[in-house]
Image (cartoon, rainbow, N blue to C red):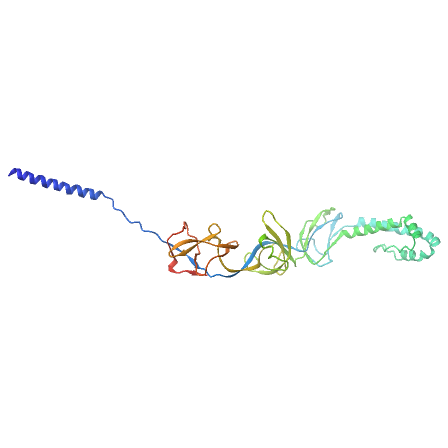
Length: 374
């Protein structure tokens, strides 16, 4: 009897141990969790091809078309005039901009005039005897000789003999020395060549002005030029007379300009061609920075997207059947921030914003289940 009881107890202990070990093994098993796949949301646009004008964008700085650097050809002390020689001063055509003291030079000129006058007087007796027919014209010349006015032109010589006689008495030499000094005397006064504004003044009243010294800058503020650089690919589209729209950086003001010159040489380093635009209007100042929009041509059946969306400058991602696909396109014209492309069919859903880590076959969904149309 005891034997059977021992066997039963042993069986119970073995079975209990089995279940205990099984429970311990099951409790040590790690539970596995299913990873939920993340589907990114994308912004898309629907392609609508149309005719897009290609606008050549450029920028540059305005420079006065008519401008001069004022230099002194003589030496002397700067004298006062009706208007102070200061930057910003405006002048009419022919008005005196500055005056340099010329008293010493004027005295030398008068001395030379006197020498010429005396030389002609000294030959009058010989002219009366040897050239009686020419005497009256030389007499009239002396009568009209005014030391305070420009020296009159010498009388017309009627014969070779008279010419040799006058030359032998150094009349021509004295006359042209006087005329040369008169021309130089005029350089002591600088007048405005046209209506304009003094933009720079480098000397003050009473300063000693030296020959060859720069005194200032003078411009005509009514007409300006702007130099721009255009891609050489569009040289055939850029022609003299093309209209150009100009605006400031804030795009609050606009002006209309015209292409007046196109350089015939291409810059080898940048592959650009320089063009010059003429513009006038209120609010323009020299040194002003402007942006130019020049309509070159229209690209037929094209679409415009952000340059950031390009992949290797030849493909873009499109949305199709809940995944991303890479589509090859044909870039036509690159702007600063956008690019005009061809090769997209109407209705194609393209990304309007970049997705970090995008790849072909990536599962995505449109924002709010809708697409954005341009």
